[in-house]
Length: 166
Image 1: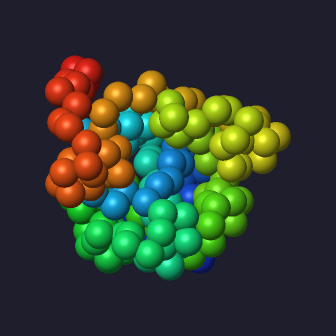
Image 2 (image 1 turned 120 degrees about the horizontal axis):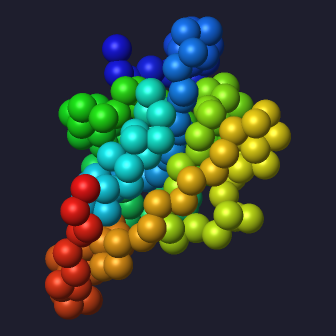
């Protein structure tokens, strides 16, 4: 069972903690999966035993990114994320931030991409407060859903950047 609601994920994670497993949490819109997403998710999974991905709902993405987004529905984006062997669970949240989900998951490690400053990462204070840690994965320049959409629409040239070897 990879796709789970917030009640299920809380129960699953409580069991993982009892079993001594280290839980890693990351989140995002994951509107158009690209090499930067894959690198971040794979790197996140390497920080622990279980990777839980919080996925913004369609309404949440629209509020954050505008009326033309998301490109893919939450169910389609979840299906893509669940296809990766290194993603253990995906939980969709409707809020603008994943804080409620972070509080339910209670991860040992909170992971975000390098385009975020530590002080801006939602859930950091809570995770560090219960003894967890924050990991920031370096950003891969040129890979973002917005950049890709801009390329498709002809607004931006291709970046020509290569993702780092994993």
